[in-house]
Image (cartoon, rainbow, N blue to C red; front, side, top):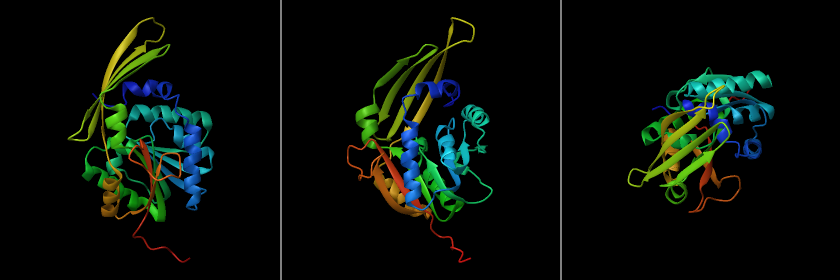
Length: 256
C-alpha cells in the first residue's frame, strides 16, 4: 500500500489545524536572516503545496518536488487558483534533479523522517549541497526520537469529519527507530451516503540531532545551527520537532 495515495484527497482536511501561515512566517524570517529575501527556492517534499504557495506569496520563485502524484495534482489545482508561477516536479527526494542551482532549499512537515535509511538521507543531503548556490541555505525540520517514543508511539489517533474520518494506529519499534503508521480512511463517495474504506502504511525514521549533524558533514554541507521548532531556542531532550539550518559548501563564489 503506497503512502499518500487515497490520503491525498483528504490531506488538507485533516491538516486544517496546522498554522501554515505562522510556519511560513518563521521560515521566511530564517531565510531573511541568511540574506535570502527573494530568488529561486526549492520546497522538497512539498505535498499539496501549502507551504510552496505561502512562500510564493512572500515573493520567492518556487519549485516544488514530491514523489506522490496525487498530492501534486492538488498542488497544481491550488496553483491554478492563485496564479503563482510554481514549477512542480514529480520526483523522489533521494534522486531529485534540477535544471540549475537555487538560493535555498526548504523541507518541512517531517519529510526528512520519511527517509528511513541513513545512506538515503545522506544522498538527499549530497543532492541539496549540489543544487544550492554557493553559500546557499538548506532549512529542514524533523520529528525527534522523543516525539516518537513519548507522544506518537503505540498511540491511536482518530478524527471524524462530515465527509471523511480516519483511524491512525502508531507502532514505534525502538531498536530500528522506525515509527509505523497504519492509516484507515473512510471517505464518503460523491452523491452517496456510502463511505469507502482505504488503507495505507506510512513509515518514518526517528533521527537525533547528532546523527543529522554527522550526515550533513559527510554530505559536504556545513551545519550552522538547530532550533526547537518555531523558536530560537536550542533543542532540548523534550523537543518534539527540530529545525536545522545548513549551508552549501564546496562551490567557488564568483567575484563578478
